[in-house]
Image (cartoon, rainbow, N blue to C red; front, side, top):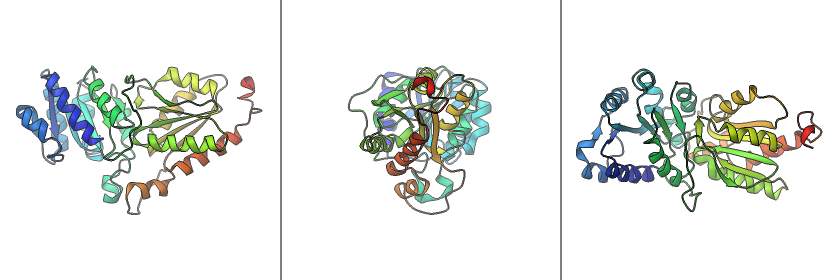
Length: 319
């Protein structure tokens, strides 16, 4: 994902002279091409993320389109006040890009884990939160963010994520992307966990349960049109994210659902637990510890599907 971001931001800068790139003293080789082609539009702000966000806000106020990039917990929680006051309060079109989100940097310990960032940023007025599911979505999100009038948070994985889209889909901020058809349960995946959700759907299919998968890449604003259809059509709707079950996609959907009336599907929120991870290991190991594997996800959904029988009062209307 980070390679796709670096390549696409360079192409975008060639098309739009307003694009400037700010980095927090990382990705120096990654952005060699950008720096060589547009040296006057590349700013290494050092390990001073709060200052970087204030710089980005000032550049935006002068008509530029700044993209600020560094490791996810450092570009979100470390400088949350600057994002809130300098960027969001002034409604500036700054694009924040966090790399290594979720448990991508699990081996580096809790300082590099980012399982609370969506919750923090989606609560800020005017902020859009976009979590691409593969490198193709990253490229499309980089360009879509440049067209937004306000701030955007792009939440990326790290490297080596499987490709999901063979051809570029119709990517629009605030609209889900269907990835796999299904009739009985819906799996709503946000971010780099998308390939795992697809693998879970295949396991469910083998167990006789037809599962739709969508890339729910935009956590804010929610695609409420899709949600209304999904909760009216499926027996179980599951949100899947490499983020805390509190405040992320699952929390967003639960908040929306609380205000709805009439028959609705059973909601299952799948994410990281409300605890810190104290065990060292890579991302695959960390996902196994917190239940974010295809096997664990499929079992959670299968269990909920069995519990949400057609005789359930909320489902009887559709049975």
